[in-house]
Image (cartoon, rainbow, N blue to C red; front, side):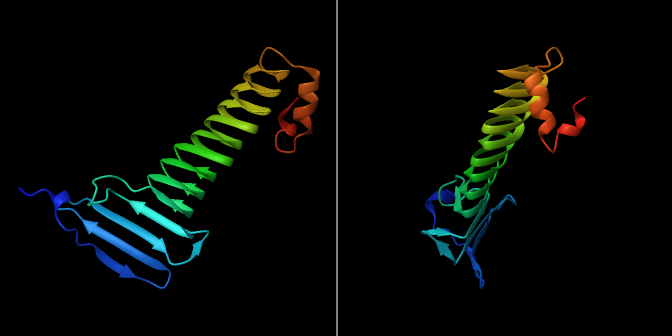
Length: 175
Protein backbone atom coordinates (compact mmCIF):
# COMPACT_ATOMS: atom_id res chain seq x y z
CA UNK A 1 0.00 0.00 0.00
CA UNK A 2 1.41 3.39 -0.96
CA UNK A 3 1.47 6.51 1.19
CA UNK A 4 -0.72 9.10 -0.52
CA UNK A 5 1.08 11.91 1.33
CA UNK A 6 4.29 11.04 -0.55
CA UNK A 7 2.67 11.04 -4.00
CA UNK A 8 1.94 13.90 -6.36
CA UNK A 9 -1.66 15.01 -5.80
CA UNK A 10 -3.83 15.40 -8.87
CA UNK A 11 -6.60 17.87 -8.16
CA UNK A 12 -9.60 18.46 -10.35
CA UNK A 13 -9.17 22.16 -11.13
CA UNK A 14 -12.14 24.22 -12.28
CA UNK A 15 -11.78 27.88 -13.19
CA UNK A 16 -14.94 29.96 -13.08
CA UNK A 17 -15.44 33.67 -13.63
CA UNK A 18 -15.66 34.07 -9.82
CA UNK A 19 -12.73 31.96 -8.70
CA UNK A 20 -10.83 28.69 -8.67
CA UNK A 21 -12.07 25.33 -7.34
CA UNK A 22 -9.62 22.61 -6.27
CA UNK A 23 -11.16 19.21 -5.63
CA UNK A 24 -9.84 15.80 -4.67
CA UNK A 25 -11.72 12.55 -4.09
CA UNK A 26 -10.33 9.89 -1.78
CA UNK A 27 -10.74 6.17 -2.45
CA UNK A 28 -12.89 5.81 0.70
CA UNK A 29 -15.47 8.28 -0.68
CA UNK A 30 -14.46 11.34 1.35
CA UNK A 31 -13.38 14.45 -0.49
CA UNK A 32 -11.53 17.73 -0.31
CA UNK A 33 -12.87 20.97 -1.82
CA UNK A 34 -11.41 24.45 -1.82
CA UNK A 35 -12.64 27.64 -3.50
CA UNK A 36 -10.77 30.93 -3.69
CA UNK A 37 -12.31 33.90 -5.42
CA UNK A 38 -10.29 35.88 -7.95
CA UNK A 39 -11.21 39.18 -6.26
CA UNK A 40 -8.78 40.16 -3.53
CA UNK A 41 -9.03 42.84 -0.84
CA UNK A 42 -5.91 43.67 1.21
CA UNK A 43 -4.26 40.47 0.01
CA UNK A 44 -7.19 38.25 1.11
CA UNK A 45 -9.61 36.57 -1.27
CA UNK A 46 -13.13 37.97 -1.15
CA UNK A 47 -14.37 34.39 -0.51
CA UNK A 48 -12.39 31.37 0.70
CA UNK A 49 -14.21 28.07 1.27
CA UNK A 50 -12.68 24.80 2.45
CA UNK A 51 -14.11 21.35 3.06
CA UNK A 52 -12.36 18.15 4.10
CA UNK A 53 -8.70 17.32 4.66
CA UNK A 54 -6.02 18.46 2.25
CA UNK A 55 -4.52 15.39 0.53
CA UNK A 56 -1.04 16.97 0.53
CA UNK A 57 -0.87 17.42 4.31
CA UNK A 58 -3.68 15.25 5.70
CA UNK A 59 -4.90 18.28 7.64
CA UNK A 60 -7.67 20.81 7.35
CA UNK A 61 -6.90 24.12 5.71
CA UNK A 62 -7.96 27.25 7.59
CA UNK A 63 -10.32 29.25 5.39
CA UNK A 64 -8.92 32.80 5.34
CA UNK A 65 -10.67 35.57 3.46
CA UNK A 66 -12.98 38.53 3.72
CA UNK A 67 -15.72 35.87 3.84
CA UNK A 68 -14.22 32.67 5.20
CA UNK A 69 -16.21 29.43 5.33
CA UNK A 70 -14.82 26.14 6.59
CA UNK A 71 -14.48 23.92 9.61
CA UNK A 72 -11.75 26.38 10.68
CA UNK A 73 -12.38 29.94 9.48
CA UNK A 74 -10.70 33.31 9.93
CA UNK A 75 -11.93 36.45 8.18
CA UNK A 76 -13.97 39.60 8.37
CA UNK A 77 -17.04 37.34 8.26
CA UNK A 78 -16.05 33.88 9.50
CA UNK A 79 -18.37 30.88 9.40
CA UNK A 80 -17.18 27.54 10.75
CA UNK A 81 -17.04 25.13 13.64
CA UNK A 82 -14.23 27.26 15.04
CA UNK A 83 -14.34 30.78 13.65
CA UNK A 84 -12.54 34.04 14.32
CA UNK A 85 -13.49 37.34 12.72
CA UNK A 86 -15.09 40.72 13.00
CA UNK A 87 -18.38 38.82 12.68
CA UNK A 88 -18.04 35.17 13.70
CA UNK A 89 -20.57 32.35 13.44
CA UNK A 90 -19.97 28.78 14.63
CA UNK A 91 -19.75 26.45 17.57
CA UNK A 92 -16.76 28.41 18.82
CA UNK A 93 -17.32 31.93 17.50
CA UNK A 94 -14.68 34.44 18.50
CA UNK A 95 -16.00 37.69 17.10
CA UNK A 96 -14.60 41.16 17.54
CA UNK A 97 -17.90 42.99 17.04
CA UNK A 98 -20.36 40.06 17.03
CA UNK A 99 -20.25 36.37 17.81
CA UNK A 100 -23.02 33.82 17.39
CA UNK A 101 -22.39 30.27 18.54
CA UNK A 102 -22.38 27.80 21.39
CA UNK A 103 -19.43 29.67 22.89
CA UNK A 104 -19.29 33.18 21.50
CA UNK A 105 -17.46 36.43 22.17
CA UNK A 106 -17.61 39.97 20.82
CA UNK A 107 -18.85 43.40 21.72
CA UNK A 108 -22.23 41.72 21.27
CA UNK A 109 -22.48 37.95 21.67
CA UNK A 110 -25.33 35.47 21.42
CA UNK A 111 -24.89 31.84 22.37
CA UNK A 112 -25.20 29.13 24.91
CA UNK A 113 -22.26 30.83 26.62
CA UNK A 114 -22.00 34.45 25.47
CA UNK A 115 -19.16 36.63 26.71
CA UNK A 116 -19.54 40.20 25.51
CA UNK A 117 -18.08 43.62 26.02
CA UNK A 118 -21.45 45.35 25.74
CA UNK A 119 -24.37 42.95 25.24
CA UNK A 120 -24.46 39.23 26.03
CA UNK A 121 -27.49 37.01 25.46
CA UNK A 122 -27.47 33.30 26.23
CA UNK A 123 -27.90 30.56 28.75
CA UNK A 124 -24.76 31.90 30.44
CA UNK A 125 -24.40 35.56 29.51
CA UNK A 126 -21.77 38.07 30.56
CA UNK A 127 -21.41 41.67 29.48
CA UNK A 128 -22.20 45.24 30.43
CA UNK A 129 -25.80 44.23 29.66
CA UNK A 130 -26.42 40.51 30.18
CA UNK A 131 -29.62 38.59 29.56
CA UNK A 132 -29.72 34.87 30.20
CA UNK A 133 -30.52 32.05 32.55
CA UNK A 134 -27.32 32.99 34.39
CA UNK A 135 -26.52 36.65 33.74
CA UNK A 136 -23.43 38.53 34.88
CA UNK A 137 -23.13 42.24 34.12
CA UNK A 138 -23.64 45.77 35.28
CA UNK A 139 -27.25 45.30 34.14
CA UNK A 140 -28.21 41.64 34.55
CA UNK A 141 -31.55 40.04 33.68
CA UNK A 142 -31.81 36.35 34.36
CA UNK A 143 -33.13 33.49 36.39
CA UNK A 144 -29.96 34.03 38.43
CA UNK A 145 -28.33 37.41 38.03
CA UNK A 146 -25.13 38.91 39.36
CA UNK A 147 -24.10 42.53 38.97
CA UNK A 148 -24.72 46.08 40.10
CA UNK A 149 -28.33 46.28 38.85
CA UNK A 150 -30.05 42.89 38.82
CA UNK A 151 -33.51 41.73 37.78
CA UNK A 152 -33.86 38.05 38.67
CA UNK A 153 -36.18 35.55 40.34
CA UNK A 154 -35.00 36.74 43.78
CA UNK A 155 -34.09 40.39 43.19
CA UNK A 156 -35.77 43.25 41.34
CA UNK A 157 -33.51 46.27 41.63
CA UNK A 158 -35.65 49.34 40.69
CA UNK A 159 -32.90 50.71 38.44
CA UNK A 160 -32.64 47.35 36.64
CA UNK A 161 -36.42 47.20 36.15
CA UNK A 162 -36.44 50.73 34.72
CA UNK A 163 -33.47 49.96 32.45
CA UNK A 164 -34.85 46.70 31.03
CA UNK A 165 -38.33 48.22 30.55
CA UNK A 166 -36.71 50.92 28.41
CA UNK A 167 -35.25 48.35 25.98
CA UNK A 168 -37.50 48.05 22.91
CA UNK A 169 -37.04 44.31 22.44
CA UNK A 170 -37.54 43.26 26.08
CA UNK A 171 -39.45 46.08 27.82
CA UNK A 172 -42.92 44.75 27.02
CA UNK A 173 -42.18 41.53 28.89
CA UNK A 174 -41.21 43.20 32.19
CA UNK A 175 -44.16 43.61 34.62
